[in-house]
Image (cartoon, rainbow, N blue to C red; front, side, top):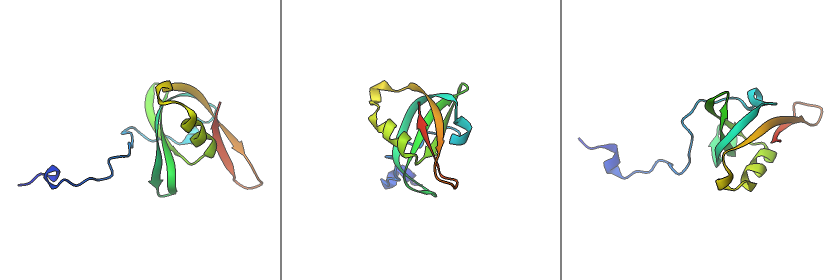
Amino acid sequence: MKRFSDFNITTGTDKNIFVVPVISIEELTNCEVEILDYEKGVKTRHGENRYIVKVKYEGSERKFFTNAAPIKEALDKVQKQDFPFLATIKQQRFGSGSGKTFYFT
């Protein structure tokens, strides 16, 4: 019987999905976390060009998905050799509805 690897099929392995439990970014709001790594340009059911951010929180590695422009911009500006680093995740509301975004301090 053939093995799947014999077919030479690639399955989008260029994206790191971080095999750790998911945590909501809301749970991390106002908490200091260790930012371990991230992957950009990820498509989710909520849309394209999302980021997956791998963090250490309360001694456990987790990941969250975000489309928050301030976080995406900040991660893109940090050099890879500067990972990991500590950051506090903050939330900023805007408008009169449920509009909000997240950022690092």
